[in-house]
Structure formats: structure tokens, C-alpha cells
Length: 296
Image (cartoon, rainbow, N blue to C red):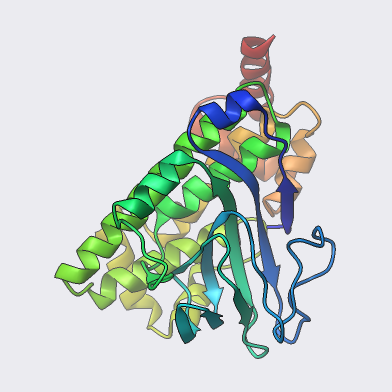
């Protein structure tokens, strides 16, 4: 995915909802890259030496790579993939990816009475801003749902992404509760990471064999175990992800069929069209025409 971020306007109606999203985005930081990258407003930029103080809450999800985090209430802490970092207002903090790994980060900035209530009732704590929840499809989907909604800023999008943010916080809290009661199976962790790798590399060339190599497991074992957990072989799961993504892209008028096939790394437009019809029962052109008429 291409890096993206956006800082959002907020009006009185949005604030009256109880929770507003101030900014959101994702950044894929390669190895040996200066961090943070420039381009953000000055209030959000910081150096490792001086750190930063925000006047909002931020939820950051690290889905690949690793790094370090430190704040006034939290000593220097190692960050691994599958970690949520909670930033609190008026709390000096700093974080960065390791130069030898880089990382993938997704984030939203929020404020409002609902979040203050969560803190007041100790659902989240400034003393424990680093939460190891693991790689979860539900969290990934909510972050991307929020990010997608901000790209168009359609009427009513703020209450929509506010609700998604509350859902996201609920999942984070639930995962923390589960982790405190039961250890998670290593197999489950491997499958969760495999699904993340597939989602994260949908528009690139990646094979199930390469995923197994990345996870440091044998391909035969990986294929069998993945199918037991998901009901689909890895390659079929990856195809389903691409078909689902292509449905969303086809409903954006500016995207041609060729562009969609190219963005999702299908070998040709012909192959994409054939596969799409096989999986959905209609051609991409037919699906697009029907979908766009609904929005007229």
C-alpha cells in the first residue's frame, strides 16, 4: 500500500457526537530511513532527542517490523509487530522503528468525551501505553475502513469513522483481557501474520511459498495448517482478498478495468476479467455498471 495521511476538519456537530477523528493514515517506513518523515504539520513532527507532546489521543498499530517507544510514564520499551501504541494528550513521548527493520504503522488521532470516559474508568492507562494484541484482521480492517472514509470525506463520514474508532478500541480492550487470561497459540499467531502479509502485499507479487519463507515454516505444513484455520488454501485466500478489493476499486469511476487489474498485480486484464467472473458470476464491466447505477 502507498503511504497516506490526512488531517481532518472538525465542526461543532462532529464534536457533539462524543468522539471525533482528527487525523489518520499509514506509513511504510523502509529500513535505514530517517524517521519521522517530513511533510506533517509542525505540531506533529518531533526528534528522538526532544520527543513530542500532543493535545489528543493517538492509536498506532505496528503491523510489520519493530522499534522502541518511551514516554514520561513508560520506560524505554521494545516495540514488535502486532503492537498498539496509545499516545495520551499532554504526555511527552517518542518512538521510532529500528533502522535494520523499518516498520509499517497505521494510526488515528482522536479526542472527545467518550475517550475521556474510557480513561476515567481505567479501560486504558497512561502507565501502560504499549499493548501487545497481535496481528488481527479485525483491527486491520477497521483502520483501513477509517482511512478509506477520510479519502472521500462524504457527508456524515465523521460519525461513521467515530463509530469505527470506538469499535477498534473495544477490540483492543478485549484482546488485552484475553491475553491476561490465556496464552495465545503460536500457530494462531503464524496464521494471523500470514493473513496480514497477504493483505499488506495485495498489490505486489507475493506467493504462498514466499510467505512461508517469511514465517520460517515449511510450505507443506503452512498450506495444510492455513487451510485448517481458514477453510481455504493460501493461494485461494489471496485471490479472494484481491477480488474483494477489486469490487471496491471498480466502484470508483476514475478507475479503469485495466487500472484495477494493474493495481492488484494480476498478470493481465484478460486473466483478471476471467477470474472475476468465475468468482462473482459477472464480468468486471457488468459489476461496475450495476454498482455505479445504484449511486446515481
